[in-house]
Length: 213
Image (cartoon, rainbow, N blue to C red):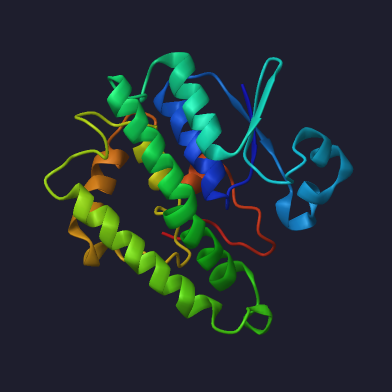
């Protein structure tokens, strides 16, 4: 399989983590996002939405990380949930992640790490920080007394929600404040196939140094 992505994309990392955890043979097609490649005609022909990740599996071309994760789980039978009820719960958390969790964390990280302060919309950062804190409370409460989001084993819901939380750039989630999230991330990092995002996909932001230690 081919994954179109770049190092700074947490959504692309979610898919890369899943591919490795599922022991799928894949290769990265690095996208020059900061040079405008996702706005090019060639990329828009691949994905009219102009976003990464894009997964190519033979004649199947998929975009949107939640759809790709569901496809991989369905194809391999791994990280999919162990019953129809669990599968619905996995989808519920995938949708919540895209709307309430990653949907807030991603823009917050982009504004604070990659956009000059003078270009940030007034009030956007504190607004997003509040949204991230509220989402963390939901997730941390759910994880109290649980090892995984759904059932007794990790699923693509876990692989999705953790996607942005490994990066050194500010993303609004302070692990020390959320013991359930903190312990959950340690469990995820112990799964076969886990690597730091910048070890899976090199950084590409102009002027970026080697990964923060």
